[in-house]
Length: 133
Image (cartoon, rainbow, N blue to C red; front, side, top):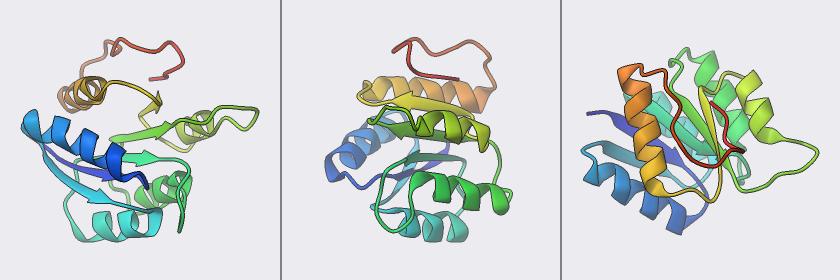
């Protein structure tokens, strides 16, 4: 299937998403902060980047900017649990994220989103209406 890099400072979220993606047949790498994530995708072949927005040592938008600078491709999913006047998910879309997900979401939604992204499917993944594609 694909190699997916999950960048999130929450151990439990990384573990949950990793388990679901591995069960779906993907190879998964993880990083606990933005700087580690940048090092991981700079040195590995990654098909899909999944990153949280709010993290220490480089936030998700920094990670997305570096991914784009290195011309790693369009397959980026940015996720966040925070909402408010500074809608970082909207900013992520403007910076080139292919999809955004509002936490919490079921792990199966991420699996479906990645599979859809990899096959080039155009139909939206069902779920939270706050999510954007």
